[in-house]
Image 1 (cartoon, helix red, strand yellow):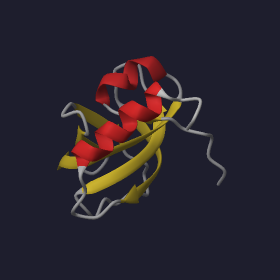
Image 2: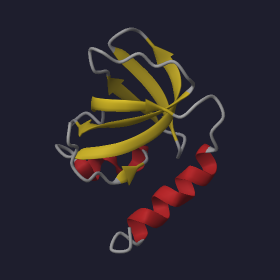
Image 3: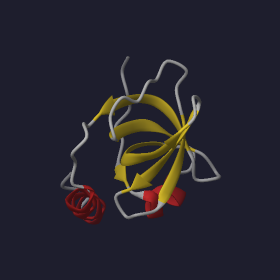
Image 4: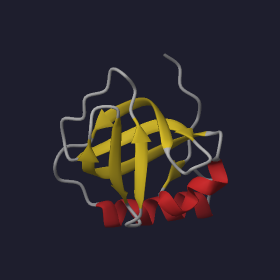
Length: 104
């Protein structure tokens, strides 16, 4: 499957991308089959509407999906980032990538 170019975002940036695909990394806070709540790199919480075939098997997940008007993300595809990931450093990267979007 070919995926569109997707900006990396944290929870505070989602409103800017409603209706568009984004790349989001977070830590699983709660998961109940079709939905997951994730802690974003900027400490906000985001609801993920999981793809029907998704199974999150680690604490940190990258989700590529479309931002909804309520701030949730409809997952298109996801990837495990393992059980040890530095969200603070990742958030610094996300902010810089947004700040210098012409470079990234």
